[in-house]
Image (cartoon, rainbow, N blue to C red; front, top):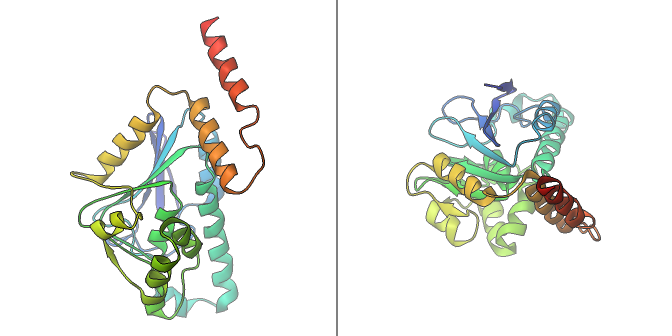
Length: 243
């Protein structure tokens, strides 16, 4: 199996779906905000052109409880933290901009930086016993990996403010009601996330999937005419198959 281990995560492919697993103790704490080296991740994805989806999950009972708060005090000033956070922000932007279907499979706790990671995905499938929160306010800080703005875009201003200012934590059902999660799994969240991704991408070529996702990603950023040329490219692929 083509598996890469980097920082506190592993990355491998299951058919046409990449699986990125955070693995660091019982709570999968982010002792490194950049939980997988961005260059390693980007290179691995580029060398797997057959991919049409990515699933991010946590090993064991939890997705991730976020940062190890002891690191806030042990860091050598804010400059060191700023460098680490910027690397994490670059990684999450890379995940967010992938021309793939991206799904977070969330089991147990998904707090702080863990939720910020999940928010970089397009879809979130969680277990019934999952809990969510951007709880940094309880430790005297604020989310630092782009989670505040992603949360706002997803659930709106009022709910985002309540979660960020009040440290409000949501159950799986509350998260589904406000639109934070796509669905609650009836059985295993990872299995259902795989099924979700497979169903969404079934009977479509990689070029079709990447053309659609890339167009919507670019449209979200405000790019003008991001679908230009994509119809012709997909049609040419179909013509070549039938010729």
